[in-house]
Length: 226
Image 1: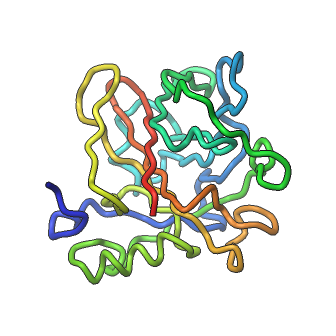
Image 2: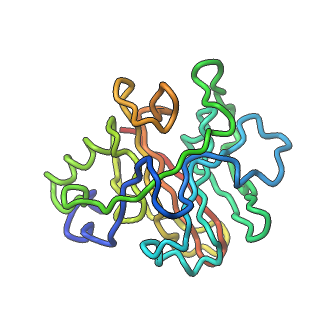
């Protein structure tokens, strides 16, 4: 059984995501990427963020053949509880749904539902500090406190901060191991950073984890409850 912390979690280097100008076209929300076909999608996946791959700090992703990397997920129902798989297309900034939970889903309504599309805001990257790498039990617990209920809830690259058992995702296309991309936890209701107006980023007491298969350009998303 894999541990959620240890010396192996000291790399690769990663970043936390904050509001603000960066000199690159990194953004939270927006509509620059969209679903190719919306037929039969009561809770269509949305663009949560995109990252400009001309940023040298993201050189590990320069071989995927895209100018920018979108992060896509469902947030308008509880379908995010289950694995999601999307194919990123190189032309047109669109993505296709490859798999989704086939059972009944509970749609969010009224004030629970975020605006569609999410209003776009500029974001910047900040290099993770030593306490954000879960190399031992102390840094793991400290990292979780920042990841859940904090303004430091959005982690790009670096090691995953698992809330439950560590998971290796295999691509549904080629069956090879996927590369970890990002983790998104949640903010406290009383202390939102401003990604949304007058409300925190909170879809539940959970974290979303994003992966990519570079050869298939398939992005997969899973969740773990806190």
